Length: 74
Ligand SMILES: [Zn+2]
Image (tube, rainbow, N blue to C red; front, side):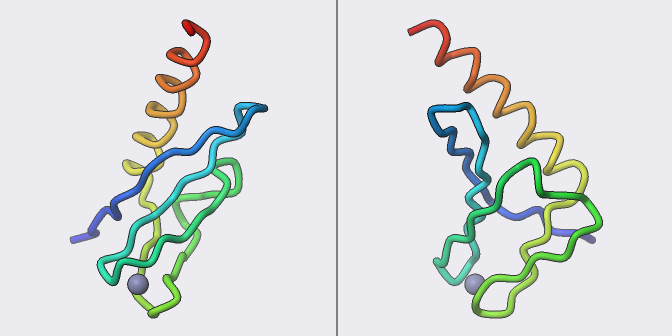
């Protein structure tokens, strides 16, 4: 079973999304959402696999869209 990593989305002022992936060790790894791909292997500094499966990337994209929508309201 593929375990989905925990992550947050950061938007910069140009609405570029950064995925902040939280490892079980407490370390956070940042990747631009645009650079992520379901087949791409990601590893934390501790060596743990923090790859983003397609379902997690879908969720990240949807969260990004929701964040952008909420930013435009204010
Ligand atoms: Zn780690």
